[in-house]
Length: 78
Image 1: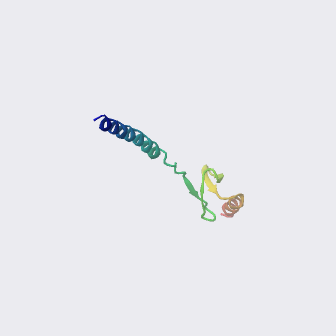
Image 2: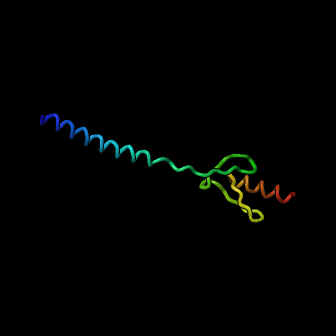
Image 3: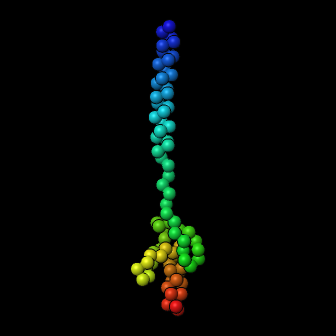
């Protein structure tokens, strides 16, 4: 009878600890970074990797300084 009680207590303890570790894993989903499309070449970049330019109060995100310069040239020609 004592063995049965110890087995039952061991099983309950196992379930309690296993349940807590599964809950921690579920909470650690990676954050999704917002991406922007470069208006010149069409590449998608994250905010952290982007070169940001402003034109007439609007923000544009570029993959490189080269694309930013090309965009400025195109806008000056208009």
